[in-house]
View 1: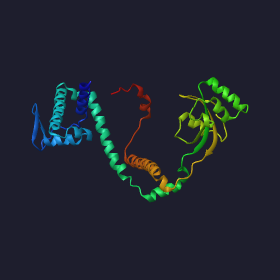
View 2: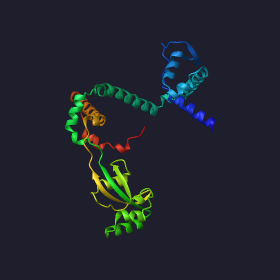
View 3: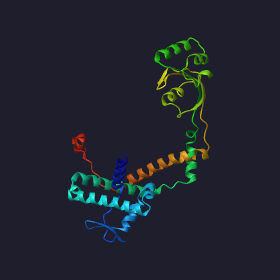
View 4: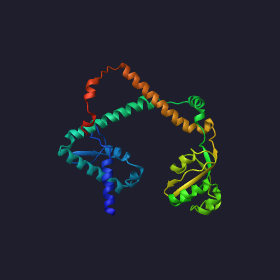
Length: 289
C-alpha cells in the first residue's frame, strides 16, 4: 500500500510540473543530461519554485533535491518517448493545445482589460448601498416548534388531532420522537433563514405566523412544524453590509466593463452572419474533440 501511495505521488508530481522547453540562453550549471537534453540549475530552480509548500518542504534538503531531480528526469524520459511515438503530431492533441492556448490568451486579455480596471472606491460603494439599502438586511428569523414522528401514517394522525383543536405543545410531549425538544413541547427556538434544513426552511419561511405545516419528510422522519413568531431581518448599516455589497458591486461592475468592451469591439468589427447557412448547421452532429 505504501509503495502505491509513493507511485501515485510521483506520477502526480511528474504531470503537474509546468512544461518548458530548454532555452538556448538558459543559464546556470548543468545538473543533469538526458539523451543530450541538458537540465540546468536555472530550470531546476524554476520548477522547484512552482511546487506546493508541502512538496518544497519534502525536497528541501540535499537528499530531497536529488529526489526532485529524479522526478524531472522521469518526466523528461516520458516526454522524449512520447515525442518518438509521434504523439505531439496527433491532430486531436494539437486541436486541444490550440484551444488551451486561446483560452490562456483570452484569460490574460480579460485580466488586463476587465479585472485590471476594476478599481472601486468607498464613494462608489456608499452610492451603491444607498440605492439598494432595502436589499441589505440581516436574515429573516422564525421561532418554531415541531413534532417529529417516524412515518406518514403517524404524521397524518397528528395533523388530524391538531385540526380538531389538540394542544401542539402537549402533543409534542406525548408523541414526538425528537428527544432534544420533546420535553419542552417541541420548541426549537429561533432559527435563521437559510441556515436550517432546506426542505424545512422553505416551509417555515413561507408559512404565516401561528400556522401549522403539513407533514414534511426528511431523513429523520416526518416533521409537523408550528411557526410561533416571524422576525423580519433588520436593515444592515453600510459598515455591516460592506463586505457583501462590495462583492456584489464588483460582480455587477465586472459585467458592465465586459459588456462595454464587447460592444466597443463589435462596433469596430466587420461581422457578417448567414442565417441560411446557420439554419442548415446541425450542432448535434459537430464531432467532439
